[in-house]
Structure formats: structure tokens, C-alpha cells
Image 1: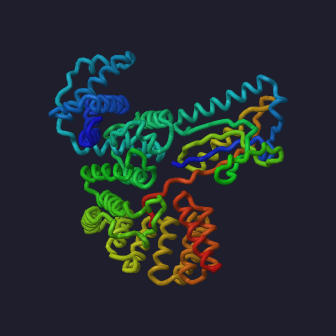
Image 2: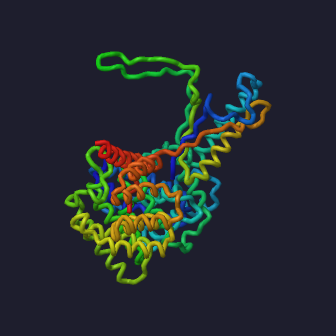
Image 3: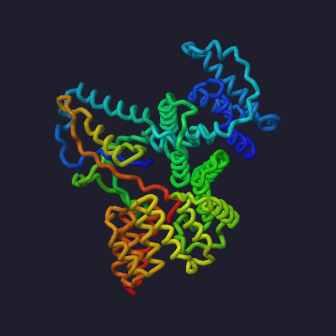
Length: 386
Length: 135
């Protein structure tokens, strides 16, 4: 095994090595395979013998692999040209090239799950097996998903202009959805977002990075030792990672100062206001409602409207929250019953709250949330029967 | 990115359109059916959407705890059990719509007379891991 230092280094070099191969004329798909081979080779050879120029080493090995594969594929028309070409020590990696790879991996022609898988492999440097484990699918399925994704983007020019918003959506998905197996997807999403932030100066990239850091800071406090969810209001704030919060807030403030608000900055601002409260009771809910108003304006998302109702309930009292809830016409939202239950409980109507918590548990999209809501219903039912 | 279970029933599902017991099919119709199921699974692996698929024996045993130091009690199988699962397939897809589309294709597996069975399949979402961002 390589040391974790080596692995971090290897994975951080992945996009620039891949970009160099593509710049030399390799197709994205072939270059990506060759880089994966080189990474595997590095894991084998580097321990005890880390090269002085790790990137040069990876470029040389990947290029050789690419040539071998090209030689084996006699049908390739450009074979002769490529075989005779000696690998030059690559030019300093253009930051733009890394960004172009992100654009390609998040291309709008890909489905979200394909874009996630391709991003984690081609720029994240994860193996197919690691990605398969992170998303609980067989390795063969993930291999097919990745090779299909590569075929989908094979006709796209490497220097085609891209939209950074597509990249951010993919990175947000990596951060927000996945299982914590061997690979820490949240930490990986932060690493990749940092890489994008270094490649492009864009307030929403900074906003997403801040959002991730602020939520990641709460990670140790989010779950009890038995794995159950701890709601924000009940978290031990002493266990929040203050360094991560400080960094998130600083990045966010710099982004907001540029006055180009976007949804990730607004979400990060809400997370920052929570982070800023020494105790749940000191949360500035009035300001949070204002940020939700911005978010509603930016996204018009039913989920955001529902979250705004929670904030209104905290800022102006449960009656105001229930009135705001009644004004929503999104009865199909999975968490609507949970929000209604919470507001009714705070309003003192424990019978309705218990019934709604039980109903919300039935509709919960994940196990931890279902268990939490069932416990809330049980708690109220026990109190009423005393 | 969501996982769904496609459940196939021996008993308990609403009646299929082409509702003929398998034992009354022609042998080549059974072969065509089995081939269709295999091709379907292979195709889903090719699209990167296949997770798992298994068939179950129709007869099972009911088991329950009977107190400390005592062996578990077994019972059944019960002929009157209404719901009898025949097998399942687990898929990992981008949307509910895609899951419905695939279930529809699986339900088109050929049966008697080489015609689609139009069998009712039950589509159940998996409970996921909790998302990181909660507010």
C-alpha cells in the first residue's frame, strides 16, 4: 500500500496528467484508461521509491500505456504518428485544462449518476471499484456506467466552452448523496471543489466550497454513537470543527462581497448563521428567513419553500409557520408532514403532532430520518398516555 | 441516483393480462421467457443500472424466537399466505420515471403464445443514506 500522502499526491495529479495526454492528441477515453493504469502502477511501485518528479513519472508511464494500447489497436489511423513521438516533459499544466476536464465530466449530455462516476474517476483519480463501493453497486455495473459516459462525451471537443454550474451540481451531488464506505465522499467533494476554485474565480464556486465546509464542520455532531441522527438544535456545538467553520465563513464573505449572489452562496449564508450561534436558542432566525427569501427568488424550489416555513416558524412563532405552511401548495413534498408535526408540537397540539410525526415517518426517504421521526411520535404518545 | 426493488410475485399481485400458468406454456415459450429475463439483466448491466437479481423458491419456512435457551419455532409453509415473492431485481437509476420505464419493460417478458405477460411488478424505493445538507 502507498502511504496516504502518496495517495493524496497521486490523486491530486490525476487531472493535470490526463490533460497533458489529451493535449498530446490522445482521445479523452483512451487517455483516461492510460492514466488509471499509471495510477495503479504508481500504487505498486512508489512505496519506498517515490519518484523525484511524481508528475513527470505519471505522464511518462501513462503515455507509454497509451501507446501500448494504441499499438494493440491496429485500426487506429493515427497510430504511426503517435508511436514515433517521444514524450516530452509536459508543460506546466494549464489551470484551464483541469477546468476543461471538469466541464467534460459534467457535460449536460450525461445523466447525473454518469457525471458523478466519471468525475470521481477521471479527475478524482478513484478506481472503479472504489466508486462502485461508494454507491453500493457491483463493480461491473460501475465499469459500464463509466465507459458509457466516456462514449457519450467522446465526440465533444476538449476545449468546448463549459458552464461551471453543471460542474457545481455534480460536486454538490457527490457531497450530499452517497454512503460512507472506504471513500469519504464528502471530503472528496471538498477536495475537488477546492481544485475547481483554484482553477476559476467564480463566486458560486466559492459559495459551494463554503457551503461544504460549513456542513462538514458539523459532521462529528450530526450522528449519535448508535448512528441515529442528531437534529441541528440538539447538536453538541462544542464538537463542531471551528477551523472548518472559520474557513467557510471567510470564503463566503469574500464571495458575497462581489455582489453576484447565487444559490450556493445563499445556502452557505444560512449554514454560516447557524454556525455563528453559540447555542440553538441564539440563532438569528430573522436573518435566516431573509436568506430563504433570496433562495426562493433564486431557485423557486418547493423544498426551499418548505425549509423557509421552518425558519418562519422559528422567527415568528409556530402559528406564523403553520400559516406559511398552509399557503404552500406542495402537498406532495416528502418532508411536509414532518414540518407540520414540528410546528404543531411547538404550538402545543401534541395529539396532531404525534399523528403527523407517524405519518412523516411513513414517508421518510431515508432510514435515519424515519427512525428519528418514529421516535418523535413515540415520545409524544408516551407523554400523552402518562 | 436512487435504488429500486422490482418485486415479482408468485401470488398476491393483481392478475396479469396474459395470465396462463407457466406449466401450460410451450417449452420454447419458457426458453424465450428465461432468455428475455437474462437479456434484460445484461442490458441493465450495460447501461450501468443493474445491482442485483435473484429468484426465490416458492416454498419457505416461517421462523420465530421462542425464548432463551429454546430452539426457534418453525412453521409453514402456509398455502393461504396471500403474498408470495418469486424474485427481485434491484436497479440503480437516475429517476423514478426511469425505474417505471424499466419495470414496464420487464413486465413485457413473453409468456404463453409468445405474447407479453403484462405482469404486475411491484416497484419499491430503497431508503437511502441521509443527505449531508439538511436545511
